[in-house]
Image (cartoon, rainbow, N blue to C red; front, side, top):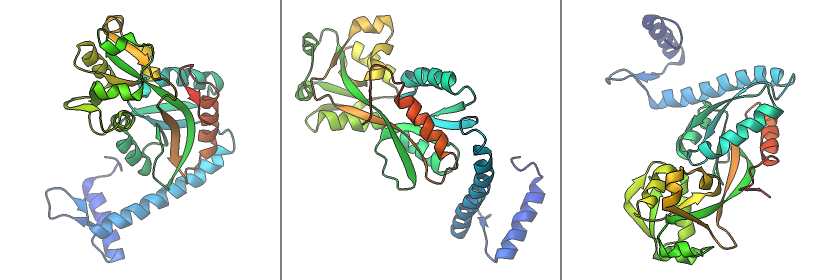
Length: 280
């Protein structure tokens, strides 16, 4: 279906390629046809060839107007709902010909999509230990503490990281980078609830409102709570120095539209919401 040809035609072409190369590319003995080990290596090289061929065309079109194109942009779930409305309004105002197609997912899957060329760039928490990627730091986002309105710590204007040691910490499920960041901020002494794992920040906020525990919220998510939840949940900042996460834009080093992404990053960094600070 993807190639717009019949199955028999595709099979014949694959068989001709196998005969030409003298190796078996696909294992057909299983219920599902899968690449052989050498087939996987050849497939990876073929993708590079296709990407480089597309790059030649992209480089030519890029010279006309680097900010007039469509970009596939990934974003982590703990950032998307809170930053994208602001970011998209900025982009549409400054670059009306730049179209962003969005994909929300956890960091690990976004990096996989990026490596496969299925998205062009991603908004994620930095740093990323991958030498094949370029990164552009956008902003530092402080963490706040969300706790039940009747919690004893709610009487304080600001909290210390040490205060978290006496709290029952609620976390997102495995795979969310914010889970690891919260554990890093609160330290090994924090009493993390390993039985209750939420799938979103809004679920965490509801759990806090029910009095189950406390959690960390990125600054951009603080004011996004429904009115009812705001009465049940108290949100307090940390005393200086505030723990934070750094958000950035990442893309493949060989991506032909690097100038587009660099200019996009510069624009976003100079037009940030008041809750965050531009990355130094």
